[in-house]
Amino acid sequence: MHGYIYLDIYISLDKNFLPVNLKDMLNFLFFCKSEIKVPKEFLETIGAFGINLKNPDEVIDNRALSGILVLGGDGTLLKAVPYAYEYDLPILGVNMGKFGFLTEITLEELPQVLKLWVEGSLTFDERTLLEAKYQDKVEVFLNEGAILKGPVGRIITLDLKIDGEEFIEIYGDGLIVSTPTGSTAYNLSAGGPVVHPRVRAMIITPICSFKINHKPFLIPEDSTLEVILKEGEEEVHLLLDGRTNLFIEPKQPVRFHRAKRPLKLVSSPTKSYLTILKEKFTW
Image 1 (cartoon, rainbow, N blue to C red):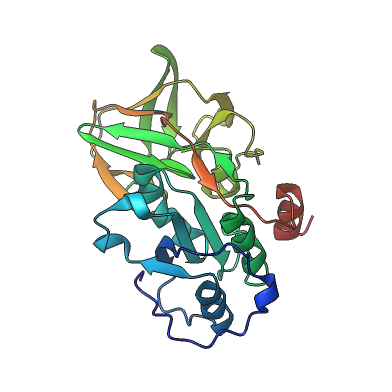
Image 2: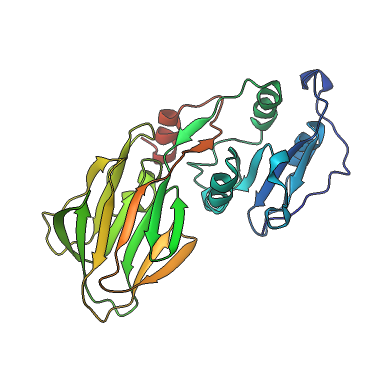
């Protein structure tokens, strides 16, 4: 669950490390992995930097917010994405999970990152967000939008159009539409490629296609992809970043395209994306 942390704590950080011009408190929306024991080092660091943590569900005026602070894993960070997009805020993810492709910052790196932040010298990675539209519902996602067959397990048929042009018919368990950032998530498990986050592309990966010559492929990120479920009795889901689940009906198109602006993400000051990739996959 996310919520408040109150900062009535003893600060043990070396005061010489702190920025000289630290005057105003930084206000962050705070997302925390459920049932986590918040480390003392984390509390001491945010206290030393005068950070005020806000509950996302209770924010009224977002103009005073500096960013979003996530303590947990990639799943926790994905829950913060709609808030980051709506308020146009950068996300700082502190890794307390297992894998941590998105939550790159370690507890040891956090003081260094916050020092750069308050000094105004921190740079942000821009990650492409995609938007899914189904009927009157519109949502952005960072990793993937997956169209999946339901519990009955019957094969489903999906018609694909790219920029209005009829393309192919996918006959199988479903389809994943992924960003380069999400290429190491569900897309990779389904046989899709690892794509560097700076590549401007949308990844389309069939799930267990009945036609074995249907392989994952990339299209330009400014394309519009339309997916239409053909007739069938199977219950079909649209799952966005593992947090939003919509039921889709035959003949009702799901449209995917690039969101109006990217996500700003704080990256590790000590490790490159390629270094993290090698470490996580033990390459």
